[in-house]
Image (cartoon, rainbow, N blue to C red):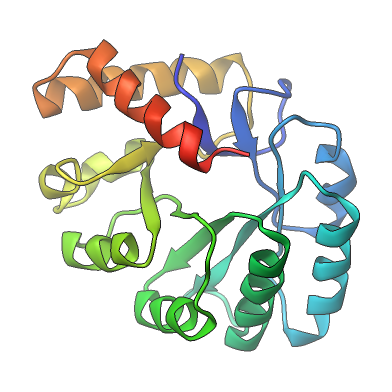
Length: 206
């Protein structure tokens, strides 16, 4: 059974990195084996609260944070500060990016982020994916990736998989089906793909 590299609060507590996007979700994941705390609708004034929460929870990773062209309340300064905080604490990050890849890449470069990171729900071009890979990150593909015109190129690159669903028996079924579909599209066996994903989990998963 493959590890879910980006999921949300559901009925299960393990088998995936459970990410949050609001402060009221942070206490709900604190006892989960793999969890991340983050804010999506956030400005620079929210940074102190996030950094304090990361410092208080020694097992928490950062996520999800990022920039989304559809949102008006997102700050590059907040993202930069959150990445600096996570880097200083040795935490990985799960990044949410929609049509603002240039700004996120510039921020990662400026911060010199030293920890592994995931760009979740990736559907952009292989050229953008390679830039993240060069910075030490990896793309995460959900079933939506198959609708991207870049899909066939993306599956030739290193990647991890996600459901982007509440962690539950249903999300596990979706992820298993997704891994089987990916393996078929890549022309390899499911066991081979699962071995590759497990290698990435050892590097990335908290």
